[in-house]
Length: 267
Image (tube, rainbow, N blue to C red; front, side):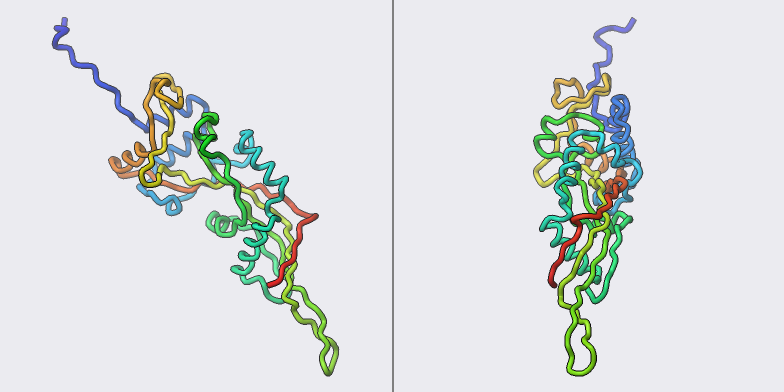
């Protein structure tokens, strides 16, 4: 029998953040687990836009199954934010960049590639905020995206207004007036989020308390596990030489437009 005085001292458990996806799976947070496992497996990168984007884990149907996301979505659709003054200004800028403001009629299509979607988004709405992070539900949406945005892209037509002008000899000719008619035919809405653990200088976001024995997640140490922060993930990258920040995109929901979907502007 070993002398009690010579027994090895009890070691203090250390935080192993690679166990967090297992806790997520135990709580049926499947998408949160997939996104984090993807982060761990990637090559070292701390610039989300430089990493390969995720386009097949998060879906609009899944996001909208959460009431706090559905509320924001339903509100932006009811308010038709793609037709407000701010959106119209962005649409005019977009059409100018696309060189569609010339004589005649020109179609513009909803972009489908992630970078083009971001470049052509004309409106957005944020889901989540400080209070939501402090007292909102701990669930798969929080584990997957935290705070995120709904973004809007458009497809439709822009047509230059023409007016007849009398000439000294011959029939009248049509000349541009400088006015344009924009018709919005489709609105595309998608989710975008940056999957990273970066902070502003002097900050270190609290990611909750994770108990690897009970597979429970709480807000404070009363949960009996490890308090986890953004810096724990950055330190893991420094120690292991891998883990890739990236952008998360959902699929796109298309809303067809047929009424109250036009506006005019003068260039």
